[in-house]
Image 1 (cartoon, rainbow, N blue to C red):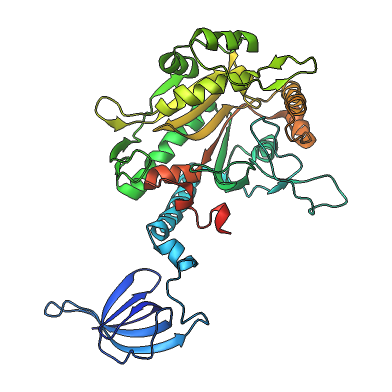
Image 2: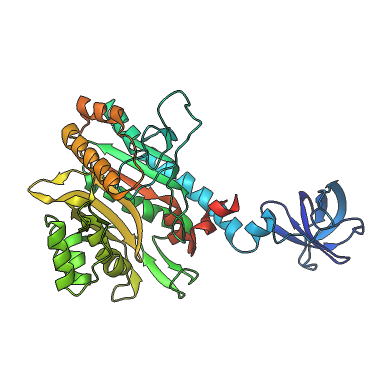
Length: 439
């Protein structure tokens, strides 16, 4: 039995050929003339498939299709793309990435969602204080400035106003100043909205989708990471539904020993940190009178990031890692979520964590155009006060809210981080075709 294959030679010797055909790496015994062939050549081979009495596949004919100009250099070259993607699991992870993206689209099609291709250049990248956008200076030289999106949120909400009810966007977003094991300035975000449904509906989506993707890759929502991640040891992860839940107030009390309601002033919050034996961070700024000023968010996150977040979604008594939905966030932290009815000190926001890693950020969406404008004006003023990059408000978004957005739940999920979890990748670059420093 013979088979014809095309591919690239990785190794050539009088007795052995190793050939990459794009799907698998063939190891072939030599049964034809190969003295003129070199590593990196593109070839067509006729392969005699092995029988029980002959365990080796044999190349019985070889035709040179093309020889790259760089032949003569070592191949694979340590500085080349072939080496970059093939020296470890990275090429295989890209194949799995493709499977996951297809499975995501299947999930939303089955749920009756419409996929939206969100614009990448927008009039405002968002005013949240933790965001920093990229300007696009040459896009509209005669018009207003444009920025690469940090999230398609404003545009998708305008489509909810237009009458669409279940929509999602799966695409690239851009955030300056974000780099590290869990960050890349350009990354893939999955964002979706359910009109006439609340935040719990989209939180259920997060859990159901994650469990389905784990099953797609591992055959079950429970799987074992092999220790390539930051823990350095094998971990059993169970994404089965339902996911455990906890309020932010409960989590901070449990892990940091502080009771933070969400309606404290910055001064009161600083006193709580000091009385609880926690580090009070450096002042956010020094005001015009030479007095130090601490922003509420800086005080909160100095405790949350150091003492709470690393402990979220850690192993239970059986040693199994379970995800955690953290909800009811303090109201000073949310620019686009609505206040919780009956508890205005918190907002309808949730995040999902596994092994201390944040996967998503979701809201019961704020639909009131007046309150939304007030919050955006506040964030603009704070940006100016703190010396942060200043961006315009998206007036068309506010006009759309005034026209009327239905009560909705929405969430944004970082696909690259989810892939890191599902594929046991210690660094975000492992699940990307190109990290920012590889371009």
